[in-house]
Length: 123
Image (cartoon, rainbow, N blue to C red; front, side, top):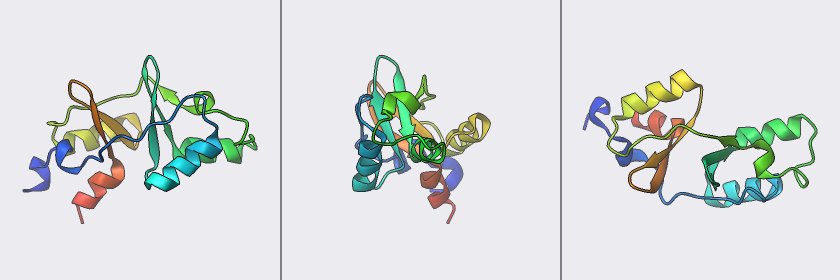
């Protein structure tokens, strides 16, 4: 299958890895390391995400990662994509919005696609 015809569903990570908005950044970092992912979905009333960059930014700002919660740094109202979207379109969305992760939503949340997933298709 050529890259232009590859769909999000072909490369997305499943199952989704989640974390509570009440968790600390230490817990979020540990979860990311355990699951070998760089973003976690935060189940709240609106879809939210916390990334390794969010954790690094907080530490770089000298915020205590044991005291700062996921809710303090997460991004809310995130963009999503359907599993049958062409990977090239997902890559364009990431470029346009300046993001590296997109939750994949069908009738429910089904996975996560990252810039790493997309890059792996070009090698």
